Image (cartoon, protein in one colour):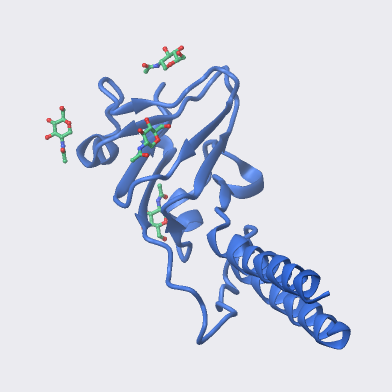
Length: 172
Ligand SMILES: *[C@@H]1O[C@H](CO)[C@@H](O)[C@H](O)[C@H]1NC(C)=O
Ligand SMILES: *[C@@H]1O[C@H](CO)[C@@H](O)[C@H](O)[C@H]1NC(C)=O
Ligand SMILES: *[C@@H]1O[C@H](CO)[C@@H](O)[C@H](O)[C@H]1NC(C)=O
Ligand SMILES: *[C@@H]1O[C@H](CO)[C@@H](O)[C@H](O)[C@H]1NC(C)=O
């Protein structure tokens, strides 16, 4: 009987650990331009404002594949809309390109075919994720229009864990 209890305890502890840790590392996939997508007449400087891009997050470019593309360039080429020698051509042809933000640095994206001159350019800074929110579990991300699940999942997860823990204590 003692052994069974031990196993249950251990399994529960493992589950709780997973429940707390998973939201912590959950990456965010940002749809560039939100419901406007990657297109002309969107100011991507404003879109990126007040967002935190963390190492492990993703950018999702949704656009008209017959017109635009997604090119990663350096700062100079971003500023001058030069698309001749991109650092990386993320265009796959489907008009839906996913870019992993897996390095902490600045990223510069433009659309070639002349659209950059009309404002189709995005500069972001990718940073390391914040430390575990032990002191302030709920981030004040009020200005985020896009789903940023980090804070939202964490609190329910904590409640769930507390509930499981309570029922476990009743069992023992
Ligand atoms: C960007 O690339 C161009 C062409 O290779 C180069 O002339 C320019 O100095 C680079 N700019 C930066 C900031 O690295
Ligand atoms: C980018 O890659 C796509 C798909 O392979 C290709 O069709 C397109 O010509 C490339 N664009 C540039 C600017 O290299
Ligand atoms: C980041 O992702 C790119 C594209 O998938 C890959 O080529 C590169 O090796 C990755 N870099 C790191 C540091 O994981
Ligand atoms: C986008 O908005 C920023 C901040 O308001 C402004 O500085 C920039 O000129 C705008 N860009 C374009 C292409 O309109």
